Image (cartoon, rainbow, N blue to C red; front, side, top):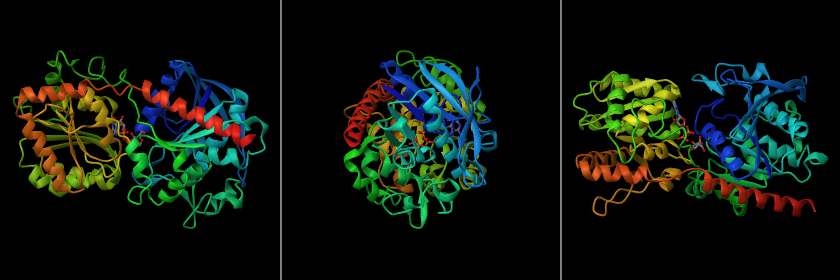
Length: 486
Ligand code: ADP
Ligand code: GLC
């Protein structure tokens, strides 16, 4: 099968969050199963290519003011996967991918519509796939175009489309005027297609037009069909529930394992944990925190700063958290509100909470390795990758039991010595505090704590099993298409 991925970010070429990790790691896992895989993503300023060759000099993308002409750059193959980049400097040669802390770029609809149309046009010349696998609102127009504007294109008659939702919180909402600008017909502006409370909702379009819809954990696939987590699209998803599935993300242990991590001070394994204390000392040095005798437990945070991540709960109870024997080290960037919040907490409790506002991949690895615990109090979490990385590093996750966090972490039971972390359910500061205190108490029992660490380190969330599940979904989507076309 030939699968073409279209996504707005992809490791190692561009990244703001977990989407990039997934698009970097799932394609090689599919290639290892014997499939042909092509990945399309934008050529951003941050995209560094070792070899780059323009293979299509001019791809025409219609807009109603003036057509735009982008080109396609061949980035070569990695791990059996072919990478192509859509090059259009006015849209993608910018400081950031989607916007700055001041807000989203105002022309994001145009930017990602150009990308989506360019992928369809380019694929006709570079290799028509059997499946388009699209991700998040930035590529939501692909399933919409395939079943509307491109309906009669002979190139795509039997091409199926699978759409993966990585986050319901970002839907691609734009004013109706965007339709004529993008040269999309007004008949898409109805409640059964893209219209959403008077605006255009691209994610809604993808849910309605894709052959199959997946999301990144089983629990989240159920949650998004409820009002609490559906962000207004729960009914649209429920209407398609027979074609909505949850497939848990895997992780790339080539990048995220303490046994071979190039970014950390010392390597270690479940058999030989000694290196972890060197990583801890190194981490505290990086954050400029006195290391003491290394006994003080360190709680790590690495995150986009966004409402989704639940950091307001920390602010609610920080005065009491600060009385505990521990230190928090946090790395993050994003919404100004949370940057300010963390910096305020750091000023107020300098001995207890150290903060770096930055995007820093090497430091993210050092936190995974050097911390004793990893905190993710998310309000919602489609999958979450950092808690899975933490397991491998023997860094015990403290998480809210939502979405993928609930699916990947089992509560520690000191009596049976089973479990991999600490979970709380209520979205309250009190619940978070109780869970952190339980973890801090467990940390005092060194031998039991090592059992807990090793339970996590023994877990295997590599991609192979999930890649096979995607293949089953691709096959079902193709069957569905054949039946529909016939
Ligand atoms: P999300 O996709 O919602 O941001 P995930 O847990 O799925 O959450 O993935 C986040 C990814 O982004 C992880 O690989 C994490 O290490 C990385 N990351 C997030 N924030 C930062 C940061 N400030 N610096 C470096 N890496 C970060
Ligand atoms: C999203 C989600 C995160 C998930 C990632 C990759 O950004 O917030 O939970 O792990 O996508 O699927």
